[in-house]
Length: 115
Length: 113
Image (cartoon, rainbow over all chains, first blue to last red; front, side, top):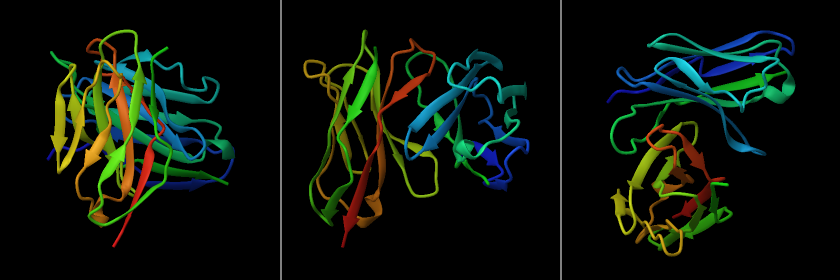
């Protein structure tokens, strides 16, 4: 079964450090999503790409977060500088837009702890 | 605006009990509806979906029927197992093919032997 791959699975770092999370979407998928999951806020959509172009990043704090897709096989989410409130599980999901509503496929997430 | 409301958890059941997790939605159009499941330490997985009114989605013994008149998509299973313990998310897609989901808050299910 094709899977969305996220790296690293766990990251612990100190406040102020740069954090980069990577995602390899399923081959052939043309949409990529970044979500953040916390106990308090649940699942929040941070950014959304279609055909590698950013369509919606309204859920992302612009001053410290950035999301890119350098190519079709890699999506990145960066936090610089990181803060303790960024501690969460970050999920990447990919999907394929075609006729009919197709499901998103999620990776297993990156668990981020900022000390 | 468009939104999804799920019953609050946790839902605690004994093995072989009947499960219902309520989900209602508010939408300005005609969404597709989904149930996702998240097992501990993993990402969300699609459990089932329904794309139009009166459709029934089913998978692994779980079922949900798209009820337009009550704007609901309740998840049911006749006999739960310990392995069904997870968090269940109801979601809708009203993005007209943009593949963008609106999720509910999730309902945690704990099944005891």
